[in-house]
Image 1 (spheres, rainbow, N blue to C red):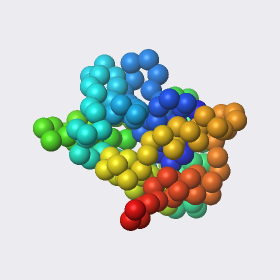
Image 2: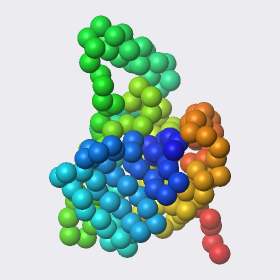
Image 3: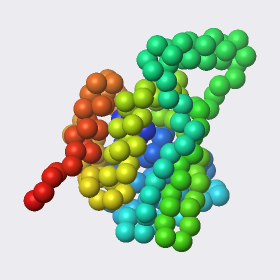
Length: 170
């Protein structure tokens, strides 16, 4: 698995946020559709049913502020011993009949995203929902990648730009 933007990519699924363990909540995207995971959810929708997926409460800071926040959090964790769970954010899945809110945990180290990566993630998520981006491209990239190391920031941004590129008129 590897983290790119708000996405945790395995060989067969893409998660919005980190892949949840056990009964933890989260959101899985697959070829078949969108699934809200966890004890309170367990709901699946086909892509044709999903109208919108939004994220809220995501920690986003410019690089210098991100570094300062991560340093502060590391010191606070060392002093208090707290901080086992990564920060959480909200994912809203909207269909024609309802909107479901799911808690997801951040996949990025320190739980804080840069503004460019965050905006590219939102664009990619919107394009996955409306069919202008193909989830198979993300899965194929992961299957072809050696190891579990996350790509660097510039590579992540380039990947999301490529995955969300509008193919233009046919």
